[in-house]
Image 1 (cartoon, rainbow, N blue to C red):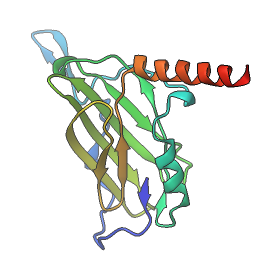
Image 2 (tube, rainbow, N blue to C red):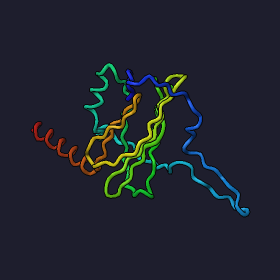
Image 3 (spheres, one colour):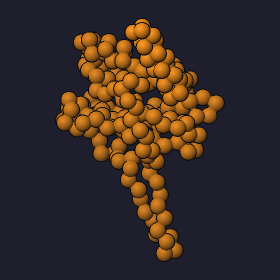
Image 4 (cartoon, rainbow, N blue to C red):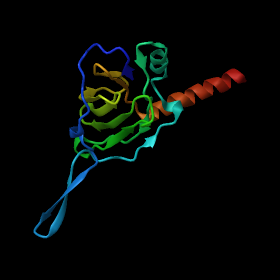
Length: 178
């Protein structure tokens, strides 16, 4: 979400230096071409169905609040990768939207969950704002990533737990009907 009334008067001019995280550079070494990765390796993760979304109440509150603009409400299903094998989820909103958001979210598992956010919010034609933060998390806890112009609320849950809850709810509804 975007903070419509940021608590800073700083201006962040657009920069080309953020670059494109998907660009690969090539080098010739003894006649061989060696690819050097720049940026994250992307996973092709399945979007979660809306029934699996966990932050619907927070979204409703943000939509009612006059000082915030909801940019996106996203969820996807991915395996738990170790730190060395983690793949990034590309985040991209419609460039025609009020304010475009692009970047990555990288989730990995060790003793804790680790969520690395690297996002750029295109303000107007004169500014863009980058949120780059790494966070150690616990499963099922909501975490807030903060920037004067941009905020992210993130929750990581096990798919099996969500599906068990949905089955239990469906069973209760069926029992109520009979």
